[in-house]
Image (tube, rainbow, N blue to C red):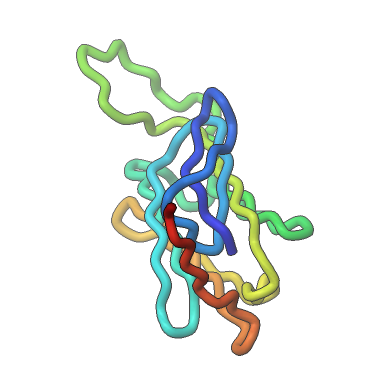
Length: 132
């Protein structure tokens, strides 16, 4: 999997830390990604959401994580607003090291955790590049 930071307004751009997962987004939801011995773990920070309104789809080599708020969701007159409980879409490009058939997700305490199992022997080796 390859990960690059993304800019919602301008699309993808290369990041310093390439971690086998890339993403593109429309509206932002904060995401952290880490690797365990057997999987990549994506943490989508989405407080105040309803778990039944998350949708995860895999099509080809892309994983899309989205959230659509329910109809009639209250929209107060905000005095100060630092985060949104609205909808979002995040798309991640998977490589051959991810077992897409066994991706799992759970939503607890405002965090959607998506587990992407790694197929043993398919991981891409780390390659360092010397800066000249």
